[in-house]
Length: 72
Image (cartoon, rainbow, N blue to C red; front, side):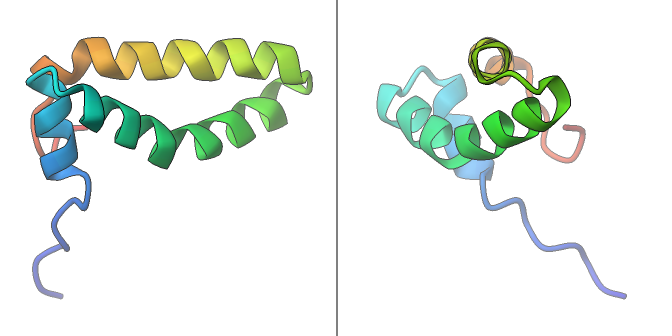
C-alpha cells in the first residue's frame, strides 16, 4: 500500500500556529468554501451556515498551536 501522501496543508498549518497572518488568509481561502457548503447542507439556512463556518475557522485558528500532524 505504501505511505499515505503528506498533508498538503502541513506547512500552512505550521505557519498559522506561528501567527502568520498571510497563512491564516490562505487557509481561510482554501477551506472556507468547503466548510460553508457543508454547513449549508446541514443547516439549510445560509445565515446559520455562515455563522457556523466562521466559528469553525476561528476555532481552527485558535487551536492551530496545539495541532499535531497525523492526529487531526
